[in-house]
Image (tube, rainbow, N blue to C red; front, side, top):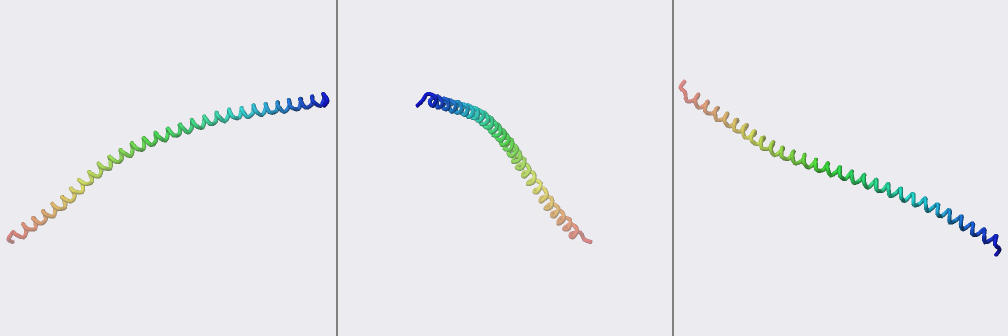
Length: 107
């Protein structure tokens, strides 16, 4: 082999090595950007999860409050229905008593 051929091969290898280093630098830069994007996305998901947890806590609080209000309303409706039924019964008894007084009077 002559020196010119060897020199051209060495130059070709140096060019290939430089190209490989450039590609490696690009891949490392891309990897760093992907790490940053992944960290940002993870933080966004963490914040989103925290928001949903906060909403779940608020919804559970409202659900508990509504449940208590429904129990209270049910109790009130029970007493109201008892009052209406007793008023109807009282009116019936008063009507019967009034009818008995009319029938018992001579006239």
